[in-house]
Length: 267
Image (cartoon, rainbow, N blue to C red):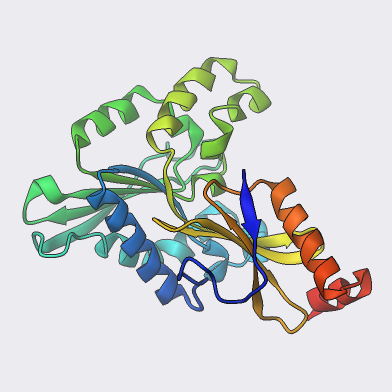
């Protein structure tokens, strides 16, 4: 990805990393609806689920707890996906979409937003697995949705996870070669990642990868004072190598040592 570095805290795009779960849900809803009005009816989203279910809790308690902790957030997000001036919301209904008791541990769940006009219904598929993605029933479901909005949420955090940019290669890694082309075709439909928030330690920094449609992708680090510092932005999702290039340049420009970074991580 070609990108540009930044030397300031204020993002050039005018969109900043949210400071609360409520703000994130609001941002994500706005990004999805903006993209939908631009004609994108199949979208991918990653919410910062760690804000409501920390990684340690996920690791210790499993996928069922991740789903349970995130359900209020997903219901709120789903409710927000109404067109301005559109039909009133009737209900949000939830149902499992991954096989119950699956040995994979997948807990994919459909949040279905019902409107007074069925043509404005919305489907939000949370933690949907690559196994679900390649099932014939899934293709039939998507065909049935027609031009209605379908949003794939946090599939890269499913037990049988997959990422849009991998284009089906997860099946190669898992040894399931027959599914590669099916998953590639599936993710091609959902290639537009309209909202994305992931925070993790990378290159010795607490790093955030962020995007809110139609704005560019951004990478932030928590600086030595714990404040988000914009490293750079790009039109395409920044690779790990590009983020490292940005963070290396940031360290040089600010005279930051390895000891400084370690202290910053310890808070």
